[in-house]
Length: 286
View 1: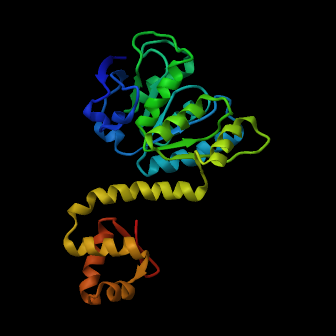
View 2: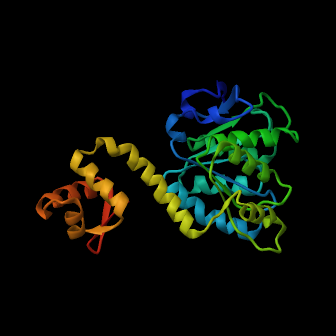
View 3: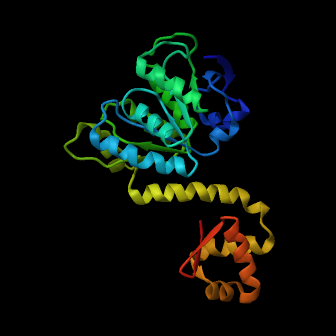
């Protein structure tokens, strides 16, 4: 598999690694770097000693995140990282793996196989370390800063008190990235770190409602980028719905001070373009 060298300021990364300290000067990669891979990203990280509970959470949330266009970023270690990437590929999503060892190192059969599968499915695997350099205690925390830098959001599935995932959350705090952690049992060692993140405010609790919101937020980001393509009437209607929330035709007409006859064509255009949706006579931004 061909390996090539790139830099942290490669335009494909969309400036995401500019926040990372120490700076990322060089990276080696397998697979093709494409700017669209990094348009909307979420890191899924956690314990190498994953529980059944952690597995079930990954199997539930990864397909939803992939379905709303998120690229899944993780570290390719066994446990949470590898399962997140496996479910990403099964869901038809894009995966970005960041290694804590040399890009050409034969590490273990599972991570090597998964690296090949990620590239074969159009994703990319990155490493700050060349050749067959062995992973060491310091390389994994350094790897974590790149995972965070590449991601819009960090989701912690499970984490022990002294796990490397705690360093990932600290990197996220330094870079101002939102962190969500899955609340776990008070009796589970694999949830002690995640629960502590929530207790101390380092992370917000991840719930089903939050997962749905993240999907909607991702779409909202895309719609925000598309607003410039809307005409003035469409922009005004979207702006009104953003402020007021879901509304009926009559509420929109009254609130915006325009006639229903003038409003209906604007609603139709926005609904056809997928910016808004109607349910039982109520219109809302998708």
